[in-house]
Image 1 (spheres, rainbow, N blue to C red):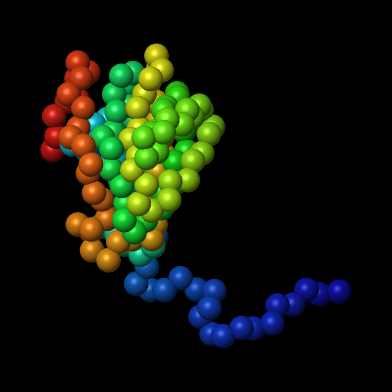
Image 2 (spheres, rainbow, N blue to C red; image 1 turned 60 degrees about the vertical axis):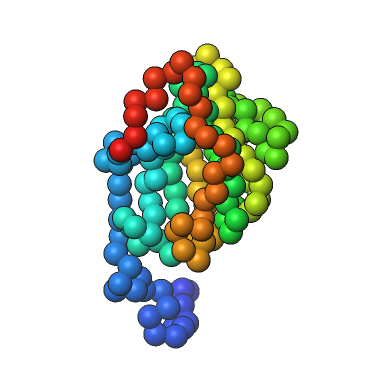
Length: 154
């Protein structure tokens, strides 16, 4: 017996010509430290031409935090790849260890804190995109000014 696949509409299973493949390593992206921690946006509309959201990784040393903020249009998916974090959601602390994932709904104020003794790495993905980039992120507090060396911004 021969397996066959019925033909669908032409081009349905082809990548559009205007959507090139894109690969990046986190070491290729400069760290952004403006909000605390070390944030690298890996895949975004700006560098990869994504149209539905963006992906990144954050690294926090013990005692570091990413300042509280919210996303009016996007939900944020967090995955703790290394270490442990406390994520404050609308003021309520949620503890996450390595291998844990968390969904942060649109409009939820959130702050990431490394309260552990080891560096923490968290992968984040946001989507959908805001109508304009400047509308996608709202800071609700200033970055931390702890004794941890934050290395300056870019």
